[in-house]
Length: 322
Image (cartoon, rainbow, N blue to C red; front, side, top):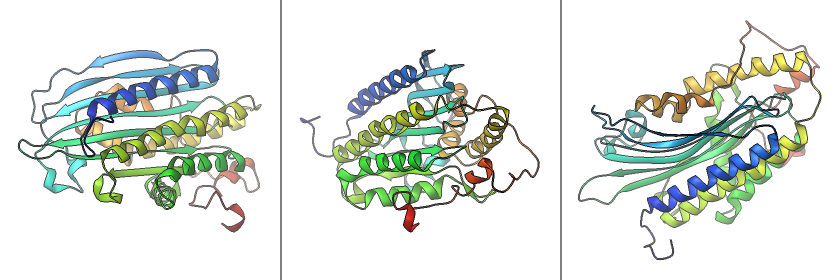
């Protein structure tokens, strides 16, 4: 990208990075699983003759039934449309009616062992276009961790990697996007966070910090690259911890919370459904199994009760002072 202008929107460079990121994450997670590889499903959507006029396609990589990963999906998509959907213009009404391109990688990993947390990550670029005008672009993404039986050292490691992704871009970046993650991944009807957070950012463009396109793209790459550095060591550390029916039942119960968030609040899910996107790719983040129990509360003092102390914002890098 060295030959481009500072604010040139280089969609092809972003696409090439995303495809490499998807392949690398799948390679590393399959190696950690050791029993299965990700299947590769390349797809193209039929041109949409409706108002939005959607075209495009993507690559879905899915691993199911592994010794370590019960279900994992890592999806790349690149779609185009004649008009932005309501979810994309809710905070930007001036963009209504523009055509758009959206490309990104989104993943969710549901491990088999209840002592291994579920993880989610995505990085994406939106470009809204109109003839005769400069394109309007913004990046978004992040990653977050959802443990069932949390360990301080896992959570601290996760946040150290989150901070490492942000530090080259300014001292305030980690704190800003850590706080946004805590606010975004919050189940209002349960009054609890989905997990222990990480990073979340959206609407990142030249107006946010004065960064040009290249700098925003570098930040996206830093977040994308740090996900596997944050997650794989936790998987390796916990995947062989013995567990029984009690731990498995609690894991499935807590997975229900994950499903609730994805269907009720997740921007990516809502955007995909509003745009008539590929259902299999949109909903591949759902857990393979989940349960709901009426008015369940874990017994005080149990391993299960410990989780609820983690489901609130906290300064994980300063535990003694939080």
